Image (tube, rainbow, N blue to C red; front, top):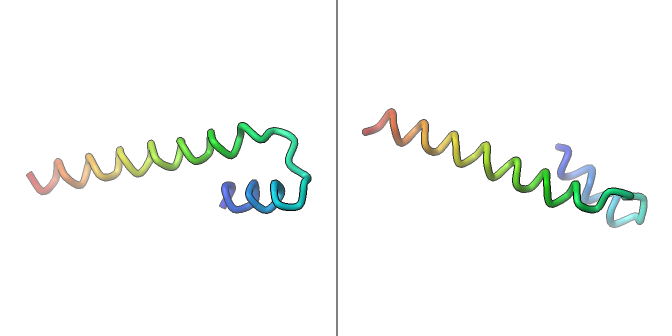
Length: 44
């Protein structure tokens, strides 16, 4: 949700902290990686 809002603000030129977009994307990837590791551990 936050990523969508940041993308929208960037498109309309209202985003001041452009690095936040990259940070949120990495946070999402980190969460997905941990979730995948946990599900793989359950299957093994």
